[in-house]
Length: 392
Image 1 (cartoon, rainbow, N blue to C red):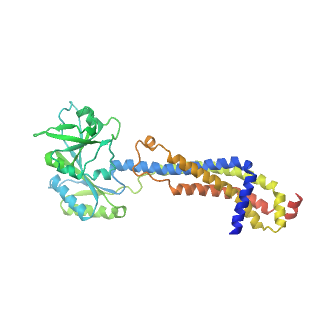
Image 2: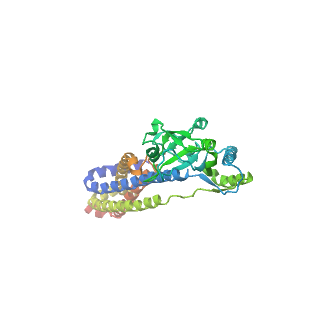
Image 3: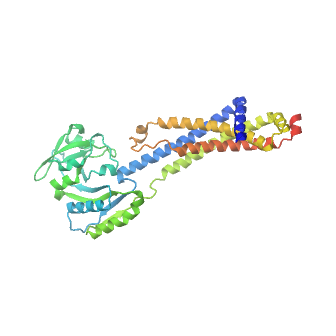
């Protein structure tokens, strides 16, 4: 252990003496490590952003989709009560109905179409629903004496004169008995030129508009380790109750583009790192040639071939390790200051910390290229004969 520490200290002293020669090569190594580490971390964030965006459309990563196959004799309210019982029996914490409604709002211009959806409170958790203003539904809203709505900006522009959701504008839903509904929240737009969109609690929709609501299916967010089991149990239980549903499991590997991008950038960074290592190799060879006499004197005083080999090798390893640490620190500083909102359009809900494996990859590359760059000079130093080195 003492020999290893001594070799490292000796290598550091040699680097201080020859710092001008190795500085440019180490700058290249540090830049390459920064690129590899930073891109590895950025790809992790990119993958998280893609996953969250996908989950806003189709639910969390282990969300089971149950689609109605028709043919049942139960009303949507009866089916919903049955599904609630099954979810409670299997201890499924989050599930929501997916229903559509055919409703009209007073004051609509000719040809204006509103996309109506009826959901449960858990839908916000399952689909990572964020709010522009106001709030999402709560369990207490189901008991209100008038329905409440969560809408988009296009709905507010069409029926509330662009009023803010936080002011709780009121709209009237047409029917045999018109119903006044209060807007409590505004959801972000999903795409450009999005039309008016409104969401209502399923229980409220069934209370006021039972004949104009159709339940298309359900979503169940289950633990990953139980996804396969529930994918078989749920359709069996639903069919046994006389409600035929087709349950679909989520894709095992929904994202590939982030891995392709990561491998591509790692390849480019690795090539840059190799170029830096070649520069360091040339400098190390030149340095060893200038130190032939020194090496011969050390050998004459009893330094073993292994000690000489390890000492010369460690010079490159220590140099690239220092460059790797600098590169990782710079990468961390850059990644931590990335304006996520501007790049991904919205903040990440589950912002991943700086991935430790990215730092390990960067340091492993730095140490590895240092070992490769120091191997040839170390072999050359060992093969020098003592008498020839002293006469050099």
